[in-house]
Amino acid sequence: MMKELTLGFSPCPNDTFIFYPLVHGLVDTGGLAYRERLEDVETLNQLALAGQLDVSKVSYHALGHIRNDYALLRSGSALGRGCGPLLVAADNIDPADLRGRTIAVPGRYTTANLLLRLFAPTLENFIVLPFNEIMDAVLCGDVDAGLIIHESRFTYQGFGLHKLLDLGEWWEAETGLPIPLGGIVARRSLGVETIAAIEQALRSGVDYARTHPGEAAHYIGQHSQEMSAEVCAAHIGLYVNDFSTDLGDEGVRAISCLLHRAEEAGYIQPSAMPLFM
Image (cartoon, rainbow, N blue to C red; front, side, top):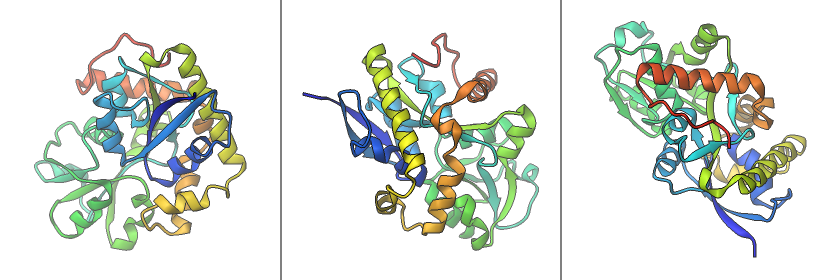
């Protein structure tokens, strides 16, 4: 009988695209079965913080809080250039003028929230909202600005919103590194052999997805929250890249840099555990 693991990932097109082969048995799973759970990224962060998932997509900010219990996998990450969170508002104001004003963020443990805090430590009046409600909150005047992620970066201009800051551009200029947004983790208690099997299956799945890009279209569409096909394609094109297949040395440096800066700023606790198993 196959060992079944819980697998958490988001309904965003980049995640459904890369996990489709794995959850549909299109690649060798190494004798493991997966029971998928699709949730928004902040819910996944919270579930991992509570230790409720065997394998999960999490924000790299959340990884800083769970690395004693979860090991990072080298495949499946959302990491790259030109793909950072955007700070938007109804009016074209200077981000420096936001001190003391309300800013909607897509989750306490999202990398977007961490990056904004690293960029502007004096900002403190944050309201956590589901990522897909942030633009409406800005438009309605419920908040003064909003930090948007995922497909919102492709659609915000159509709502008449102004980009105040691209945190990806800031990060790349500051560090010279790609921006690490989210990665796949596995519970360390699963053991070295099981985690190696998970990693191999995941990499095979990412390779399969990238070489058979049309096969997951129906699955992606089922979970894409009424996104147009064009936005889905743009989303996948932006967030699925060579780093998704393997982090490589540059990807590992980017993650290590983010975690080190978060430790220095006091947003996460230092850990002696290695990133990988």
